[in-house]
Structure formats: structure tokens, C-alpha cells
Length: 235
Picture 1 (cartoon, rainbow, N blue to C red):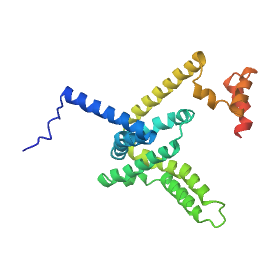
Picture 2 (cartoon, rainbow, N blue to C red):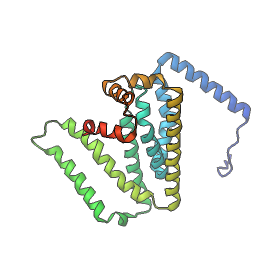
Picture 3 (cartoon, helix red, strand yellow):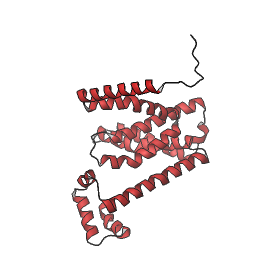
Picture 4 (cartoon, helix red, strand yellow):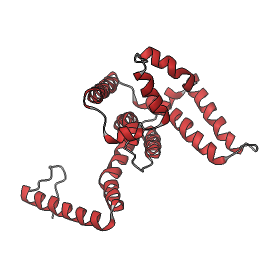
């Protein structure tokens, strides 16, 4: 028997409906019996693994995923979801770094990194790595948190240098940025005229947030005056 891999696969609507119905039943039973763990496992298998492979082998797709995830991560955190979203962002950056080496193995372009900025970043990252051997360091765990938050982010410079090379992709990023800003503006309009969601009200019930709201009620209602009021806190 010969298989023709060049022609698109065909599946009848009836068979597709049966398969989807079977998957729905199995997913419902598994979620009922094993709870959230089963649902997360299915999510990782169906979405997580293909997304991870796409980020590695299609780094431009990974860059867009990174930008979108960074834009919404704080909003998701306010929902009170007990999931390491920060670690997920680190994982995306790690996959992009792996994708960088894969792309460089296929089409080496190491010459683009031979510039003073690249050298300074590499020296700075090497210095941070050497700090792990600091004999008077208070905590190795604190070093891990620091290197994760700083060095990993600095490595994205090399990813962007290697992958953002065309005007067309820059336009895609700008359009994405404008689209996300438009979504944020619509969401702000919703908050102003229709109120907050319950999870937003819960996250706002903190001393700092209450003081900010009281300052607005007291007349600090312009962005400039509110920024001046916040300056001592930020500093």
C-alpha cells in the first residue's frame, strides 16, 4: 500500500464529529475523576507541546507569543490563579534561546553579534554568573531569583537581533502593539463605565490600592499630579 503524503488529508464530517464527541466525553470523565490535574495535563499535551515546538522552530512566532504573554500576565495574576506564570515566561525565553541556537546551526549568522553592545551584555552576564561563587553571598536562592529576572531578559537582545531582520516583521510587531493598546483602552472604558470584575475588586482591596483610590477621590485625578504623588512611594 502506498501513501500519498503530498495531498491533504481528508476526513468526513461524520467521523470528525464522532471523534470530537468521544474526546469531549473522555475529557469530561477525566476531569470529574482526577480534577484540575487531568485538565492541565490535557492542556499541556494538546496546546503546550505544539506551542513549545513552534516557539523553537518558528522564533518569530515565539517573539509574538512572548510579547502577548508579557502584556496580559499581570491581568491574569490579578485573577488569583495559583500557577507559576512568571516561570512560564522564563520557559518561553528559554525556548527562544534554544530556537536561536537551532536557527544558527541551520544558517549561521554569528557576525551580527560582533558589536560593542553584545560584548558588554556578555560581560555583564558573565559577571552575574560569577557572583554565584561569591563567598560572602547571603543566599544562593536569592542569586537564582536575580539571575532569572535579569540575565534571562538580557539574553532576549540576541534573540531579537537574530530574528527581527525585516521591515515586514517590524510592522507586524507595531500592529500587534497598537492592537493590544486598543484592547487595553476598551478595557479601561469598560472599567470606567461598567465597573470592575469581582477578582479586580479583590485584588484592589490592599492598603496601597485603597490609598490610591482615596487620593483620586480627594482630587488627585490628573495623571501628572498622581505621578507626583506616587513618586515618593516608587522611589
